[in-house]
Length: 379
Ligand code: ATP
Ligand code: MG
Ligand code: MG
Image 1 (cartoon, helix red, strand yellow):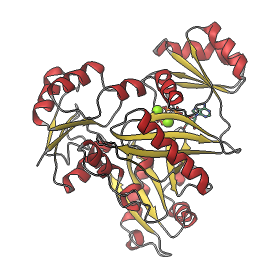
Image 2 (tube, protein in one colour; image 1 turned 90 degrees about the vertical axis):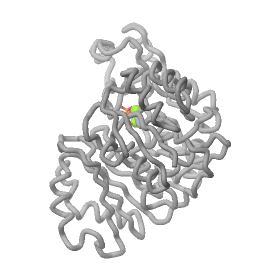
Image 3 (cartoon, helix red, strand yellow; image 1 turned 180 degrees about the vertical axis):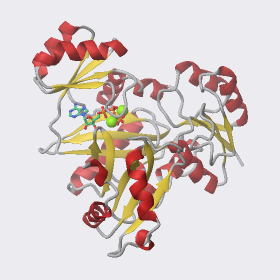
């Protein structure tokens, strides 16, 4: 069989390897932390910084196909890998999605709306743009942000200077966005293969707590029309941006039914973990299919589902619950499927696992989550 090389050894790589191994592929991963989540389930882990040219070359030698599980891959590393191995996803999409301005321009060029934004390179420009957009507005670093890090919600013009000072410490490239008073946040993951086949998974409704994904609810509690529009929009982005593999599209839905794209992630996405039991094909299997140019699998939803993230602070209540006899079949047709990532230290807000709660309705799944007491530590 073929070997798939994965840059990065976190949980996304782990679940990718678990899915790919079931399909007969071998896996080698490159990550500096010994016993990384992906390293535990891969055939082999190269323990090194991925920017180490020797280690990257080793990965290239050992792999028939190379993919990545995080998007801040160094351009030099991508180039090296592309010269020495098969990287079907290429480097262009990474280059685009690594920078919020390039990403927004590409989304607009695909004919899809983003929140009004402005490139900011001085405190004066920030003041002018903040006056134009009004407050609140959101200042973000163009590169490197995640889990809401690298951004500042400017609530009044008095904060402009402090926001600029603080965020420009990290980088000089900043973007100001108009604040979208969204009704819901939605995401759609689409896959595209080299032969040009494209499929979208059902739209997920996402609930964040402290800027970290807490729940993904599927079907999203919106009209079918909005769901279809969101899915079409993701397909359009996948096609226009020549995506190979997965693209996750985060969007805002406003009360008047408009969709604005917030950001993209060219990889498996936390909001797609629900697919593992709730769809005919998981996002991980779909990614393997796409990068290996196999026919894409059916994205059909089999059951309503709510995915709940298990952060460091939820691990203890989860482990208390899991030993109880009712933890598999919880009655009222609810089934909770636990996924843990094999991380050793349960730090606060660290993603340790997730639970897919399958039920007859998303309301029943949400009720179960509420009653389980696992997530009450956040309240
Ligand atoms: P991720 O971990 O998803 O990569 P991130 O740090 O890249 O997060 P964003 O997704 O850009 O950050 O923003 C985090 C959250 O902040 C969004 O999910 C949304 O709730 C809120 N947010 C961001 N931009 C806006 C905006 N323009 N208007 C309203 N809310 C926003
Ligand atoms: Mg992001
Ligand atoms: Mg985001």
